Amino acid sequence: MSFNRLLAEALPPADSGDEGLLGQIAEMWKWFQDSARNTLGPPLKSLHEPIDNWLGSLPMSVAMACAIGLFVLAGIWVWTLQSDFIFRGAPDRSRWRDLRIWSMVVLLPYITIYLLLGR
Amino acid sequence: MGELLAIDYVIIGVYMVGVLYIGSYFAKYIHSSGDFFLAGRALPFWAIGMSVVVSDIGALDLIAGAGGAYDRGLAQANFDWIGSVPALLIAAFIFVPYYWRAGVYTLPEFLGRRFNPATRWVNALVLLVFMLVTVSIMLWTSAVFLNTVLGWDHLTAIWVTTAIVGCYAISGGLAAVVMTDVLQLVIMFVGTGALLALGMWEVGGWDGMVEKVLAQPNESEEYFRLLVEHREGTEYPWPGMVFSLGIIMSTAYFVGNQAVMQRALGARSEWDAKAGMLTAGLFKMAIPLLVFLPGMAARGLYPDLDTADGAIPTLIDRLMPPGLKGLMFSAFFAALMSSVDSYLNSCVTIFTGDVYRPLHKKFTGNEMSEKLGLTLGRSLTAFVLVAAAIYAPRFSESEALYDVIQTLLSLFQGPTLAILLLGIFWRGATAWGGFVGLVLGVALTSLLNILGDAVFISDDPYLFVSFWSFWVSLGVTIAISLVTKKKTTEELEGLVYGSVVTKSISN
Image (cartoon, rainbow over all chains, first blue to last red; front, side, top):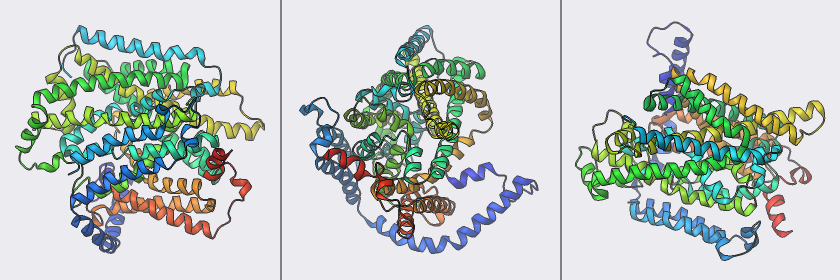
């Protein structure tokens, strides 16, 4: 749930005229929220907006490449792990116990799914 | 769910008896606290993998997940696909071997040993409060569910659920919890699989679903895409999904989740612990198909539901014949109980290991004995379960408390992962660096959440907030560590990755 929506539901509306403790907290919170958004919002927005604009300008093929790239990088990294590390604790070194192969078995369907449904 | 017939009650009865039998079977193997909390380090990889998956999915997740897919389409699946598998690989090949060989039982324990006792206490208390409230909430959810389906009084429903979970969790500990989870997963998959088959048949298959959804006003092909454009008003923009969810949030969730790590630590070997994580990755693939796809099918069939969360109940009510309704009930109850028993067991483990054990040593000068640990574990399980059951009815008027707890916990995700990674991989990370990094990280997360769409493109920008809070915490921790006192090599022995894993490989 949105942080702001959560607080909005927990506290009475700031302009409700509630003079109890919750009403006072709601007013203070609204003041703090508005102050933060008015003072920090614009400069932080100006910092983040170029990033948003750049990300928005990227074609969806880049998105798919990044998503699939994450799975592929994970797969490449797994194959750099030493055999001793992979088989540690295993009763034998049968091929079916090679967790690097297991990792490929797990990763390949996901790569296929994102290739088919990524864009 | 509509009316249940005799055949449904038979199926439900068989399921309940099965859970009780499997759970109680393991009581005879429990003779020490190690048997109780870590299943005697005898868990096979397939049980670990299945238990991790089903513990992660609660009944609320089934409803809300399908509801999310009903509203937003296929992008919901990212939470169980890209939001699971890279993280499970990282867990399998980095954190599981580390925790296993460092002899760490809980995350608070590691943070305490690596940084300072205060960090351990804060982390343990935050997790304990969260888990206690979660068990209560889930018992209340169970009561609402049983009241709706079977017409049971809320209190009766709470105590029936408490009794069933208590029967095996108190006597059998982690072993009973994990093995009942195996059964719960099978039931859940069969039940939701039946719902998927019926839903897709009714909507006319994938093509029929696409045609019906696209015929609705304001719907586009984006509904059927996994990756969504990064633009104003988007709830699941792809950069957030790939870089925040896929790398940071999911890793923080899995390696910081006591229930997940405890199952790995209860493995019969390090190989089984790693293989268990990979097995979980395999089963995770099915979750969006079994849960989210029915939600999307419901969108094609019943586009005018009052609430998206009505997708699954509507499908069950209108499509499922007698017998299968009983199976779906069992699947829901399985999802519920698997989460209750997992949080319960983890809560007791943290209290025993991170609160009672240090106090016991401080005041008696001795380590807690195995027998005392077992007695304490069983007693606490019963106590926490009963306390949660007594407190559960209060959530009828304050369900938002769960959202509060979840939101507060999410403030810690990015910063905690940052100090955890630095604590494990960098000898230069200091106690002050970790503390300041955590505090400032949480403060930044809170502030960015408040600013919301004043800065980001989404009203609820948790994806980007986690991303930035992680990097800021990382930077602050490094900066403060460079100018504060470091621990000696001897003090770090057995705590940093190089002295734990790499050394063990070369030995």
